[in-house]
Amino acid sequence: MSDIVVPAPARPAGSPLAGVKHVIAVGSGKGGVGKSTTAVNLAAALSKLGAKVGLMDADIYGPSAAKLLGTVERPMQDENGRIVAPMAHGIKVISMALLGTDAPVVWRGPMASKAVSQFLGEVDWGDLDYLIVDLPPGTGDIQITLAQSARLSGAVVVMTPQALAGDIAKRGLKMFQQVRIPVIGLVENMSEYVCPQCNHVDHIFRSGGAADVSKETGLPVLGSVPIDPKLVEEGDTGLPVVFSRPDSEVAKRFFSIARNMVAELSSLLSGARVQKPVVTEMTPNAQAKAFKVAWSDGKTSLVSFRELRYLCPCAACVDENTGRRTITREQVREDIAAERVQTVGNYAISVNWSDGHSTGLYAYDYLRRLLVKEG
Image (cartoon, rainbow, N blue to C red; front, side):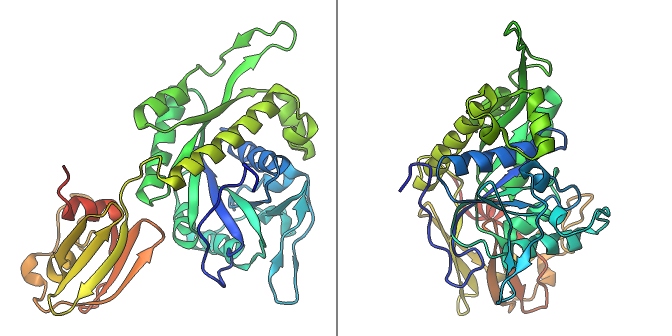
């Protein structure tokens, strides 16, 4: 197996993504940082290095991946009704921009999330080593839909060097952490400008922003990308720089970022990079009226149904403005029972209670703080 391909646990048979080893999200806390350019060239670099790659443009409101790859080919349907993604430069690609309309997408969040779910579940992605997902900027419904619908191997966060961009990037990092998506690393775009005549380096947007975020969060910097006017021109003509100028400095940076991402992903999956513990099993015991919770680090917890129902974190049980609990323990029946327990993405547990309540999501971090005494 190529050293650019990281082995992955098999997905469930029959899953729409059964043949996809890794789904990698590329996101940013704000727009205008070169996220889509990074996602496209990361996909192109992985493909050029020998991996089988797909690119899903999840930026429903501002799709640009198809243009950056230079394709206008409409998706087709096979005999089974599955969507066949067009190929561009050897990369399977799906985007709202390929669906045949130039009209702006004016959708509420749930509709956009449904489109992303269709891209994940109805496209025949086949066998891929990596499915790169170009996220919209920010921390909204689409990001949450992905966390719940796809087993993401990790995320790459793109930022620029300014201090403000660093603050915004950290909000994006927190969003990924809250939904239990491991952040593989940071990419600093527009890191410097190198004069083509004299090779003088000018840090137009300051320098060291990603390094500062890395120092604060402990996350690695996968690489930096300099300002290159030709990169913009190539994006407009649909030719990623790793194909058009593979020996250029900016292309070499993208190849390096791809290799570093693969190395960090391998480190994450092998356990060399320590992740926060996750719930591996949550077993209800009707006789004891309690849950036994098993964690990935070997620790176990016990919590009664009544206590966990009382500690529900949803907006119906906790005032969103004050943070005060709006129910009392006395209001929770002693014979409360858990009728259904299911995992949500890789970050939370959902419980349907016998009193009809089911809107609370118990994030792993929240359960850990409640149930495990560290140290």
